Length: 258
Picture: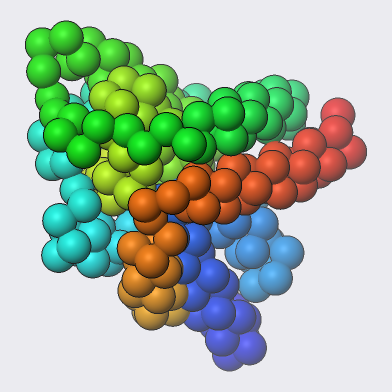
């Protein structure tokens, strides 16, 4: 049982995660697990993963509602991406519960660096505002969805860092649409992972509730800022910088555990 201060810290952590999800559609759960372990003080990493997956899914749903009101969500693309990813997330989270992933976390951080470089190289590309689901891109959307879902489930993360680039690479949609649409998949992946962990009793329900409350306010602020930054390369640059910061942290932590 956590003490009152830990729940206050949980609410503050939720605000940071919600802001990240609303701003760039990612970073939420990558931030959530370290915050729960090192700031809130959740003793079990698996409990932190299961609880953060549930909280991030709820916070992503809040951000999704804000983006939907702004008409920045490509629903059909998001639905196909999420459907394929749920299968991957179920497989990945089942493996993740019983696997020591330090070496894979190190490799995953290297992948994030590569993704960040690719995003910076393409930051001037505005994308096609009329991008939509078609026969030509449906296999790519499903492939990226399954792959990011598996990563998401295994590492207990929402997967936004890979979902946003995956949507852009498979559909060439603008960054602001990729951010909004990614939240469909982040919500679905998080719920899948959380359900799998909850089945094993690895979710702290009161902490998840407090985390979600903090995330609602953060998500609204993040979405508002995302709309202001869209239309130039700024949002993509912010996204890439956040990738590099989190990747550096993951490399440091995972290298120390090797």
